[in-house]
Length: 82
Image (tube, rainbow, N blue to C red; front, side):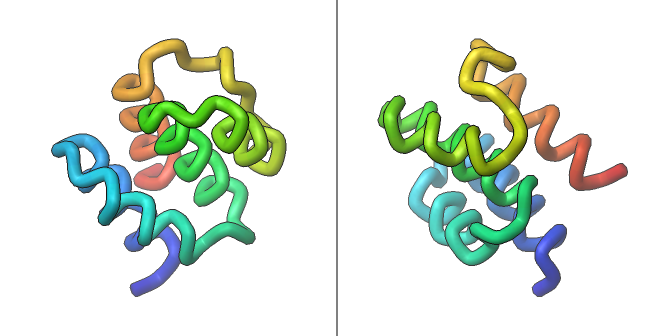
């Protein structure tokens, strides 16, 4: 699967509560900014704030940008399906 397809699948998995599946897919694309953003959001959901903030720094987004992780997942999916 290509990066974008993997990340879309990861977002979809997270939205239905399959956090482990989503995390495994996100980890495959740690060099991609959107992959880092998704990884950050997943750790926000966990919750693991310190780890989440690390991935936000790599993504170009901020921890505070989206208070609601589900809304953030929807934004990430929209960015991936442009």
